[in-house]
Length: 111
Image (cartoon, rainbow, N blue to C red):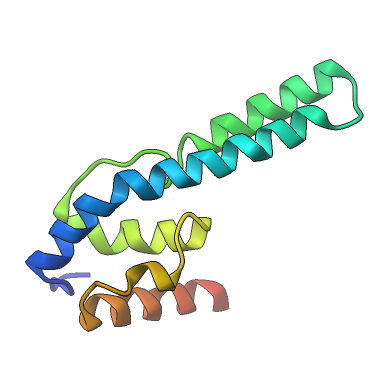
């Protein structure tokens, strides 16, 4: 994306919301880990399954990201694709940002 498809207000709003979004997402992940550990399986199987899952989850935008304004759209797309946020969470953002994110999220599901 060469042209900026969001406003300064969008960037400020994103910076204000990202920590809460990540905390909520990590809370959900923690509950999923508890379910995984509660499965009826050998302790070693649960351990290695959890280890693999945590390694994968640590790479997700919903867990950590490098805050660069130029990556705002990519971060929003990743957060939605990961299930960390939903389109409803973008209510306060500009229409331009919402349209751009929606366009790319829809394209990623068709591929």
